[in-house]
View 1 (cartoon, rainbow, N blue to C red):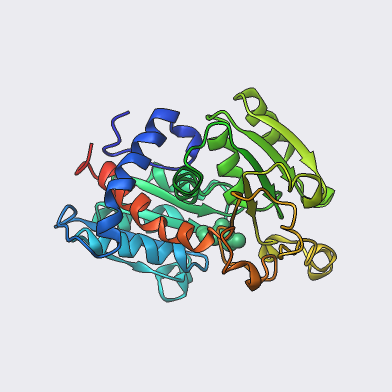
View 2 (cartoon, rainbow, N blue to C red):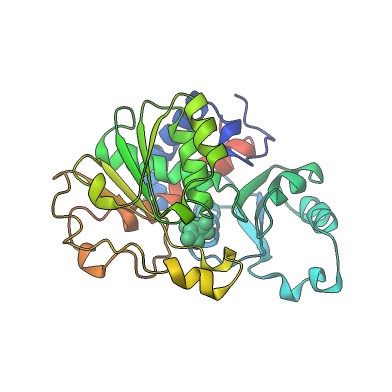
Length: 309
Ligand code: NCD
């Protein structure tokens, strides 16, 4: 597809070839992302980062990507200091950012907000997380991690573990993995299982899916164990969060029967679901995964602004 001017709202808007093209370009960006090679690819371009929800990795890796490519950015990390506080609508905020920049990156608590934003923007809008909806750029870096750290995506058995109900990263990742030849196991207590519509659509797209309640059921089989945080901020009340708060704890015991070459991934931030004792083992891929956010976002920014093809 011709990416120039396209909004990236859901990974479902991309076909497998589009995804592979982004990942190929991202591979080539690694030396620039590491600061080993300089680039002026995005010179003269401005990215607006509009973050209505907290973020560390997503915002900073977008900004790092832009700076390392010689571009610049403006925006806000929380809306309190903007006219949103005065009651300005999302549509008007987007119209303004679109007038001041070449690409908009938005994170917002409401599902569907990025799609709405794209309707009011003359420049490409990239969804950096819309409530419990989608998180397509996280998915691209997740796929880059699977491809680079296990050698390929096709044929992989992937266990998605944790808060599959409210976690937007696993919704997007499921749709993307369904475009490849993968076996997906959704590991969660019943109250946090993957929404039925996501499971159904992934099945229609060709994914082989199954449900499980505990990691023990799948740990021996999995090539990738993708762990997620329980999304506290999306629970209706504290009591219902507390019931499931510490349901998963991935430590060395839990990984005892894992495949030798299995990797553990996590979009981060982690709270208590991965014990730090895992960090120094060969299973831990989550910090590399976070780094891959820079080259994937470089590739995507280049494509949607038309400086890359
Ligand atoms: C995730 C998110 O914001 O959805 N974080 C991220 O972007 N790496 C995951 C989370 O907050 O649990």
